[in-house]
Length: 158
Image 1 (cartoon, rainbow, N blue to C red):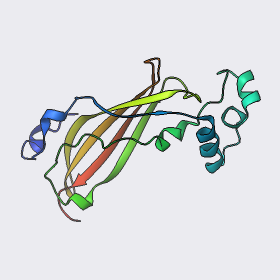
Image 2 (spheres, one colour):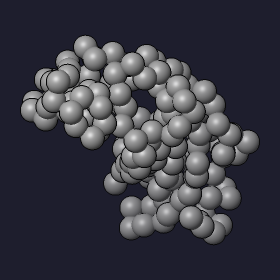
Image 3 (cartoon, rainbow, N blue to C red):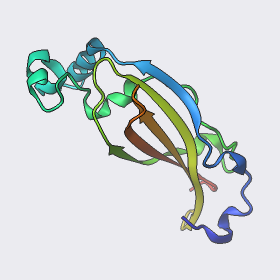
């Protein structure tokens, strides 16, 4: 996304943009999937019932879509943004693309990158958006999902 000259005066480490950084891996257990599904109030037998899941389209228990939140990762890449108050940022959106399910027994590895940084000027001043992309792959090297998370920091108080 183009931000014209708005971003030029904003200080941050541009060298990390687009650089993949390993942020962790985790072997997924059936117990973790079932516990997560129960905590979320899920009743889908694909997440809970081994017999039903084996007869289903994936041949095994799979994780619910939001399960990736429970995978502990290391710190995401930081652009060291010097703009506004560090305490004024907030989550501004998330986009998830699923490619295949996470199964019990999978080892999921993740890499993260700062995919984009852009600024917009609105009625309350300048907003700087940081898009972080996390790519999750399984032990076979296949991508299971890509998550783009957006945060925004406001330059001036409202």
